[in-house]
Amino acid sequence: MKILPVQIDVYALIILLGVVQGLFLGVFFLTSKRGQNIANRCHGWLTLALAAVSGEIFLNYTNYTFQALWTGDFSEPLNFVIGPLFYFYTFSRIRKRLPHRWGWHLLPFAVWVVNSLTWHYQPIEFKYNSYVHAWHPELPYIDADEYLEEDFTELRAYISEITMVSCLIYAVLSLLTIRNAIRQRPELRSSDQLQSLRFLSWMFALVPLLIVLVKPQFQRDVGDYLLATYIAATIYATSFLVMRGSVFFREDLLPDSPAPETEPPADTRKKYERSSLSEEIEENLLNRLNRLFEDEKPYLESDLSLPKLAQRLNTSPHHLSQLLNDRLEQSFFDLLATYRVREAQQLLRDAATVNLKIDEIAERVGYNSTSAFHTAFKRLTGQTPAQFRSMATSSRSA
Image 1 (cartoon, rainbow, N blue to C red):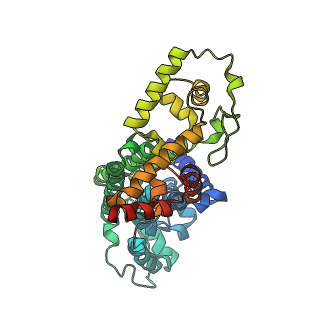
Image 2: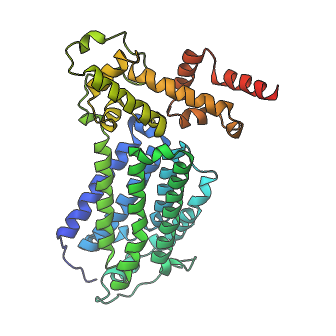
Image 3: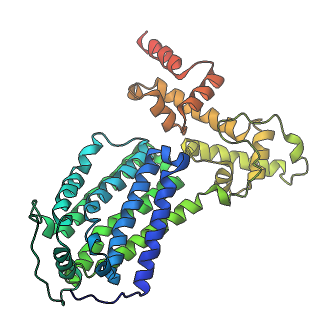
């Protein structure tokens, strides 16, 4: 066997950093309370799969595979799980659940896992020839006998094309899921979460295009380092989005109101006595707040916070909090609950949404927790959502 020396260049470093960050990010999504969220689990497994694929390309590109021939093509079955996992992540991020019959999407992956056994259980000489064939076609082969028939599906020669089609199909499904969510709730168009999701979906949609551009330019797998570089860029873009939304960077360490779903403190007018907010400015801000709530319904966004709302109104969180306490005699979370419950009442009355479950209505009006929705609804109406719907149904049929 002829063994080539290890080569490390800029591409190799970028790919390696992407692998390390992918492993870290995958573990981050899958551990602690984050791992209890279905979308986080999908994203975590997706990131680990991308790290594994990039890791194999790193070994091949740098010639480390000559030192560890047993790793040859170890991540190939993951080509069939990347697309479904990204779609699962997008769907569950919006719907809070996996799509129906999601297991069928993983059938090609399962088939390829079984198929991979036929080339993993081969002599080391066979694996040497496979690596040389894919990455160093200039080197001569050595004599090798197969233990098993290498590929019972007879599709392995088309792995790049199949991967491209898979990524394209699931990228389209993800973008359609986002479009349908916006059609159902137009106010989500300006949501930071949905914009981040759309950005990642378009990055994923570029993968098939990149395969089309790269593969014809290189013999066999030699150009895969460019795909791994793009994967590294995607992983770091995801990391940036995670950091951008992290509570670590929030300036409101002592917020004007308590965390969501808790009771706000009593009247806090005294702390605004020295505020520069005049009655005229306050009136103008109140009008803008009312118009925003009527036109865009930002209260339906589950991640809406006092600083985010203040940013939309071009004011400070302190001034907005003063307005709510002085003019509306409400905390920020009381205001959200009022509008969300009002919206829920419309959905519970409407015959077009009579088949929606209570938890689906809670999600539509901005609550991540059904119990929090029940608590707010009962506090403001004196009834549970189910009781309210029952009375509304009786009134329609009377």
